[in-house]
Length: 281
Image (cartoon, rainbow, N blue to C red; front, top):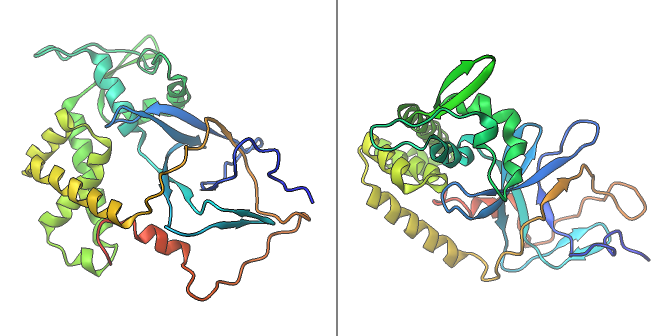
């Protein structure tokens, strides 16, 4: 009996992502530069929202996909990311500031044109409304020109930290029992994953009266503890760049796949995501 995946170039993988709306039901996988590491990173852009890919794998496990057994039990899952994080390095470079010179005002199409990264052009529809929060904007003859504003960026970062801090305090008793300063450090730990140390993280820590070296040391400790508990198997390649379709799980006969009865000792998928958190609950 022919399998639905037999003509695939690569083995199937499991991706948990939002279902694209619209007639074509398509999303786009964009190749962009990571805002902190400057490495090529893939993002999912669908329905005007940008998502980052995360990857998790238990030491042992596999997936049952209809009549097919996927030996690789890893899972990709998408989480929303604020486009400002991704666009911040581009706008910082585009203004070309030097010392007391605040830099130049530029149009969006100039700023988002990055050679070798056409994916940024897909963000043209949302870049303006988001970057107005952190930029000075001038309008001439119905054309908008943007220049990054350091004071607005700092205000935005402080607002983000406040939102993260409130969210963290609701995660569980262990988090709720932490003091204000510890919650503040946890929140900065999250935002630092998408911010360069210089200048943004340094400016933020100075504003919040935190020691940046302490924040970075906490990050190293968290990374070490997570790696020790993670599977030694390296992550496979991320989903290839292109479109993401709109599909549903069905058996080989076209009927909805039956729900599997959990076996004794099996783990709920929610438990996998709990292990990614930095502290237990």
